[in-house]
Length: 322
Image (tube, rainbow, N blue to C red; front, side, top):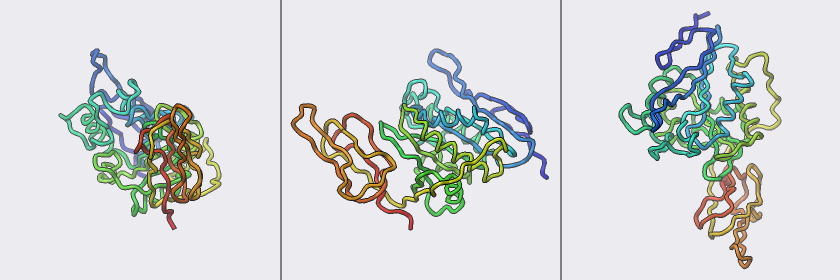
């Protein structure tokens, strides 16, 4: 059996069998207080893959942070073999400010691989790529829907990547969406560095939903079990239904501005003509029906109390994998 090598992160060394929390210190608050991003590392004495569980690339997507927190508190991050690294909050500025972006108004998930001398967000991306990713074999990055849009639990992968398809099958979220890697995203950078990433989406911003969290945790345990990393202290629930693979999908957009009254729920299956929502004026005179343009699964539902013409209100599948 190969000897497990020391792990080096941000100037610190973590030996085999060691547990350590280290801090990523890149910038200070405007008050000159230090800002530390905790990185929780758990290593087995047995060699194996190095897995990263990350959340909070967008500071307001706290359901992902809750998922990684529970991975730690339930000790799912203590591996049978290999190493598990947890970063519950990457964009700690956004988390503090309950904001998606960094203080420089940039989306961290659009500036990878970053720059050592660039904007604040770009510098964070740079150090993640330079210091963390060279050590990593697999990543699960946890996200939630933005702007009051609620995502059904889903894994997103690029079509044609057979290894990621296999990992998505193991994770077995209720839905798996094929989506292209976006330039500047964490996922795109991982792909270029041959780090295998599953992107999990579930819930909405500034909200905790424990059904979504439970689905994420069960998928995580299946993922670790497949890699022979899950401690024998944890059990894996029997899968009741296989993930539904979505080839293509469309956004349904509001044709009118007004108060939004959603009826259909995220994850539900609808047929063409089903009533999904109504949009009304505040004065009790006008009410517009929103109907399904086709049959399919609703993988995202807008929870906002009012909408403007053109706002995305439902994300519906248009083609399933055959």
